[in-house]
Length: 66
Image 1 (cartoon, rainbow, N blue to C red):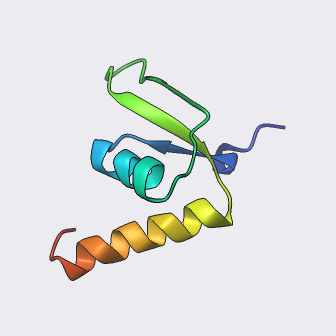
Image 2: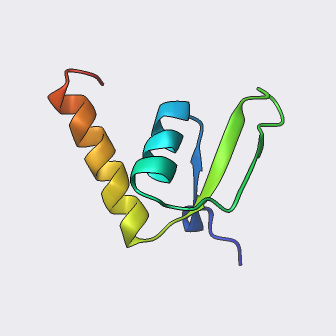
């Protein structure tokens, strides 16, 4: 059975660069959202990705960005 929590879809170029270049986390594939045509990158959800997302969010909070 498909579990939508199994994957994380990233629509932010800044977040993608953080995950790929700084954290060296590989993505599964990329594509375009069928309605908005915005580019996304699909990542497999695991503890490493979850920790990176928390760190990214915390950095934004520390810089006054939401």
